[in-house]
Length: 191
Image (cartoon, rainbow, N blue to C red):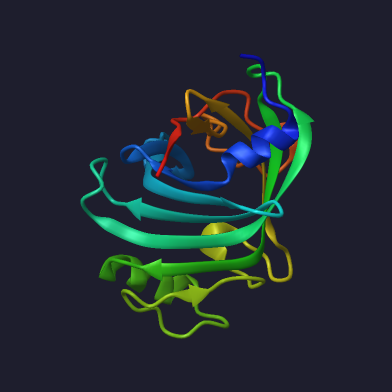
């Protein structure tokens, strides 16, 4: 079977996708010895009509996903930018959080950290209480007031699994076209 057309791909992607198991990727934060700290998470992703998406990430303190730190909920739009050379049918896609962006602390220690580094324009951070960071400065994620979070990523569908781009091994985000991923990440499975 050949690669799907862009319209066939968009139609096939509609629905809900989720992590197969907890995932690990490099973060931009470093350990005292200079190595990158791991970032453990699960993803729940929904592709909606009109190139809309929702993404919920749960960040964990441990590789087995037993100690949740925070839930991040993003809503926005996907922009299709053409073929990506990683595999036949892969597409460059920009994800923009232009509808909503929320953070919910799930562990007291994480809420305590947020109460030190993310106070301007926020209520006190509490476990289980979501707060919108949409359109605001949020230092822990490098967000600047008035700017929508955007990632230059990729989408690849194979064997009914949805792949995005693998994180850059040096921890760089997908914040520019030059940083768009060149490899595939652990896939999401259809729910």
